[in-house]
Structures are given as C-alpha cells and as structure tokens.
Image (cartoon, rainbow, N blue to C red):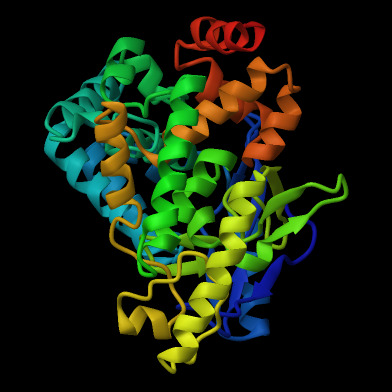
Length: 409
C-alpha cells in the first residue's frame, strides 16, 4: 500500500492540468506488485480524496471479480481495453490502434470462451488463428499483430485476474510457434562480412552520383551499415551528432528518435530514459567526409532557393515543401528506394535496415566484445541482446564461426 499521496500534475495531452493518481500494492496471494487503474482529478483536494479512496479499497478478489470469471473473455477484455483507452494509458495513436485491433481479434477468435475457462491451449489457438489469417506471414515476431495481442492478453489477466494463474505464457510467440516458423516468416537476414562490405561499397558509389534530393537517404543507409542504428535513430540524425568521442574517434551520437507512425520526434531514444544518449561504433573516414561535404552542399542549395530552414537533419526531406518547412525527414518508406536497389544487388528480398543491425550485433560478439558493451552500443539490455540477436535466431554457432573464420584468413 502507498504510505503517502502519490500524484502529479499532467503537463500535456488529454488530461493537461489535471492530477494523475497512481496507487500500487503488493498482491497478498501472488506477491506481485500491482497497480490500480489510474485516475485523474481536476483539483489537488479532489486528488487527495481519490487517493484516499483508492488506498482503502479492498485488493483481494471481490464477489463481483469472482463473478467476472464466468463472463465472456471477449466482453471482459474489451471492457479492460476501453478503460485503458479512456484513462489515456495508450498514449500514442499506434498503441490505441493495437488495443482496438486486439479487441477485434478476441471477439473474432474467442467469442464464446469465458474468463474462467480460458487456458493456455485457448490462448495458443487464438494466437495461431490470428497469425494464420494474417496475410503478411513474415511479421511473426513479438512486435507483430499476434505478438502484441498475446502481450495485451497477458497484461489483462495480470491486472484483472491476478489471483489465478495467467494462461498467457511469457514469450508466447516462441511457445506457440516453432523456431522454424518464426525464422521462415521473415526475420531480416544476417549478412556475411563480405556481403556487408559489398553493400557499403555500393552505397558509397551511389552517394557520389545521387542528386541533392536523394543523397540524404543514401547517407542514412550508409550510416545504418556502419552503426546498426535503428531506422528512427537514423531519421533523427543531425550533422552535429557526428563528433569526436573521448577516445578521439569520430562517432554518431544517438540522442533523438523519429517516430514514423506518429510523424514526430520523441523526447527520448528508444529503450532509453529521457535525456540519455549513446555513441555508435567509430565511423569510417569516407562516411565522415561524405557527411561534411553534403552538409555544405545542401546549405548552398537551401540558401540559393531561399528556403529558411535549419540545415541540421541529415535526412531532411527537401522533395516536399511542407516537410522541408517542418524540418522533418521523409515519412513514407524513407529507405525503400535504397533497400530495393540493395535487395536486387544482394539477391535478398527480405533485406531491411534491421539486417544491418543484426549483422553488426552478431559481428561484435564474434569479435569478442563483451555482451554488456555490445548491448550498450546497440541500445539494449544484455538480456534483450541475447534474446533477440543471439539465442532465438538459431545462428550463433554458424554465423559466429563464419565471422571468426573470416578474421583468421
């Protein structure tokens, strides 16, 4: 139980100016730390009253909660999801879309199942049915439609049925689908050392010949092949982020993230708290030179065309007047032209920006760089790095040996 009032004044969004009240408690049966649904109050005195009511309400299952076990899963889940939507807990538009889509999925594939009778088999059938009817099979990942639905169902049972065993297992996708299914449904391919070098040389040649309108995207692609940065991190890259670190090497300081779904820069880098940043691997002299030259070249273009916008963003969209004025990068498939050319060159139809990220992470491990250090470079925790880049891909032995053999030759 909270011992003192815990509420803060909301600074922006739907509840701007109101007080947010959060109450956490330790479940006596499961031992888990849980949160009551958030509430908002217009005044500080109202917030104190709400806080008092919330901290004094019973936290063990009531007769109403027990009765809820016999209600339909679809009905209970939809009620829970709508509460989250109404409370503003799904803050982004993409998060709201995911919740609404999950409501539709549960209603479609589990229309007659009660909460009480929901088992792991029920959830497995629901998740597999979701994936099988989803046209884009290659999106079978923890962040795909099926994966997000499983995550939200697990959260639903954790929050509303905490006194019973959760029928949705952790890492549900890896339990309900075989490793072969997950891999064949489209993980981005890992490149060999020779293939990565081939892509870099190709991109380098394109930078030399590209028009002023396309050079930024080719430079962003080049940056991806050398750093393994996420798409949103590259879209947020500025010329000023290329700097010399305390080891006196030139790196890309990753401090901004551009969210394509919401078409805006976020206040923090993905998987990092607000204000936290990280340095990339050392950049090649060729890339640094190309970035500096393009910065000067584009400034002349902007000045000559009387375009009053800061010449900061590497991938500033200067093809579209409105986005140029807003100082934003291209939003629709910003790397698609570059990736399509690379797919044809490498004969890899599934090649994505994420391919470079996976390749570099595995390559660093193969070079003997400590896992904790690799995780810091890639912007992950060591656990996440091992889970998504090393263990589940089924590639550690063959890929790591491939890189080691290359270095030995």
